[in-house]
Every structure is written in C-alpha cells, then in structure tokens.
Amino acid sequence: MGLETGTYIDDLVATNPTSGDLKSQGDDHIRLLKATIKASFPNVTGAATLTHGQLSGVSTPLTGVPTAPTATLGNDSTQIATTAYVDATTVAAIYPPVASGTSGKFITNDGTSVSWADVYTETEVDAALAALTTVPTGAVMAFIGGYFSNTANASFTSVIGNSASAINTLLNSSGFYVCNGAALNSADSSIFNGAARYLPNLTDDRFLMGDTAVGAIGGDNAMAHAHTGPSHTHTGPSHTHSVNIAAFNSVGATLSIAMLAAHTHTSYAHSGATSSRASGGVTDYPRNLQATSSTGSGSPHLHSVNPPNTTSTAAGTGATGASGTAATGAASEAENRPKFLPCHYIMKAV
Image 1 (cartoon, rainbow, N blue to C red):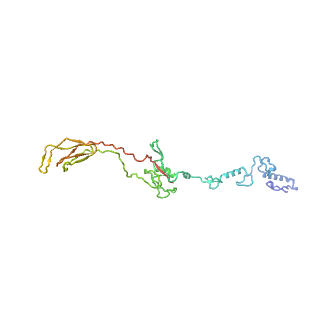
Image 2 (cartoon, rainbow, N blue to C red; image 1 turned 135 degrees about the vertical axis):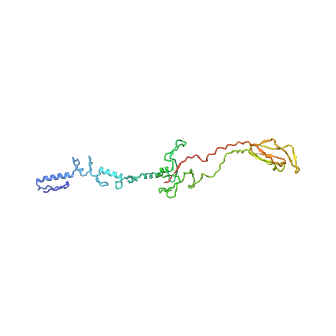
C-alpha cells in the first residue's frame, strides 16, 4: 500500500492512495491528512477569512489583528516588521545597547550619537563647578564671615569663625586661602605648586595699593616723622637779679637786662653827706633806700642803670614778677588715615 509519512502538508504524496490499495486502509490516509493540516496551521483556532489571493501574497490590506514572527534587531530584509521589532529598533536608535561594564553609568550624546558615560562623583562635580568660576587664580579679595547689628557696623557677630583657621577650613576645598603669609604647596595650583612658596601676608594692618608692577612692599608703621604743635605761651617763675656796680669802670656805663615777663625792680639811690679820700679823689656817697620803682610790661624789655663812679657793690632784689597767661594748646590732631574696617583677605590660590 502507498501510505506515506509526513508532518506538514508539503510532505503528502498526491498520488496516494493508489488504485490497488484496500478500502480498509483509507482511514490511515484520512488520519494523515488531518495530522499534517493541524501541524501546518497550529494557531488557527477559528474561521480563516483570508482568500487564496491573500494567502498567495497578493497586496491586499490585512484586517483584524494579524500577527507575525518578530525579526531579530538589525534585520533589513523584506520580512514583516512587527510592533515589537519596531519598538526595539526605536529604542536602539535612542539608547546605546547594554554592554558589559556599563553598570552605574549614564547615557550621554555628542549631538550625533549616544553612548555610555561614567557617573561623576561629588568631588568631580565640585571640581567641575570650581572650574566654571569667574575668579581667576591669584585674585585677592576681602572676606567677612559674619554680620553687624546695624548700619553703623556695630556689634559684629561671626558666623563661620573669626579666625584664619576657621576660614581656611571653610574655603580651602574651593581653592581659597587666607592671606596670612603661610607656605602653600599644592599640585593643583598653577602658582603655589612648589616648595618655599608663600601666600602674601595681609594680617599686619597692611593696605593694598595699585601699581604698574607687583611684588614690592612699602610703608613703615614706625617711620620717623615730625609733629607741629599749636601756638602757646610759657610763663616763667619769679626771680632775682644781682648787679655788681663795681664792675662798671666809668661813670655813665649802662647795664641792660632783658626780662621775659612783667616784674618790679627796686633800686638804691645815693643821698646825704659825702666824704673824700686822700688818694684818687674818690667820693663816697652814703646809701639810703629810695622807694622808687617801676613795673615792666608783659613782653621782653630792657632796664638801664647809670651808676655813679663807685667801687661799692649793690644787689638789686627783684620782687615777684606778674604771672603771664598761658595759652591752652589745641587738642592733638587725629591720625592721618581714612576710616577703616578690618577684614580677612583671601586669595584664589588653587
């Protein structure tokens, strides 16, 4: 008997059964036809509405929700593209394929294609942000880490600590250092990247001054200088003048005495009987106190004394001079510098 074996429709032999086959074997042929049809159309669970033309590949719109095998990603043949294939292709065009070593990375693009990139650490982000700053390395600026209680700069309150160490703790990670003359050696700095390199010292009440070149210093808090005081008057004490009359060798000599303040001189005048000596023809005059006096002015002046020809010595006793009025000096002048507000100077060093 010509009974073939097969799985799908194309396995069937069109010439079977032969004319010589027994009728009792016809049921074997029927079972073979049913098995191959079911194997060829495993997903057909209802009525198939496609015509023979549609089944033959004629361009006829499909109806319902037809399905098809999903092609592998990157297939560029004429095979039908399912929605699953389209979705996968779209995702692949937007996102790079997952590959070994991409765990923890993020997707970036350069305007043309996409790729995986490393996730930045906090330190790397801080460094990137610092690179975006507009403060160049070497810039020096004033820094006050606190606030005042009113518009007159009263009652300062420090927030981060009013010391170089506190400010350095806060700002060193951002590349700023207090200008306190400390040594700095950092490989990240374009200036302080070696030994024996020191920050400028602006903690000694020093002012900044603009110039055409930098690096020099000037000024001296102990520089020698002169102060000009206001006008004033000195008052001298009471005093006595003694005059040796015998020092004058001839009658008519004039003694001039300069005084500094107003005072009174009382002088002796000769009167009464006279006597003559045997030799020299010298005449002695008795001395009696004559109550004549004169008061000098408050400014310097001269007294003229014209003694007679005598060998005696008379001492004039000056009375207490009148006190001059002392002028009160003006208050001391204010220091010759503008108003100031102390602060810390910080430098962008890294």
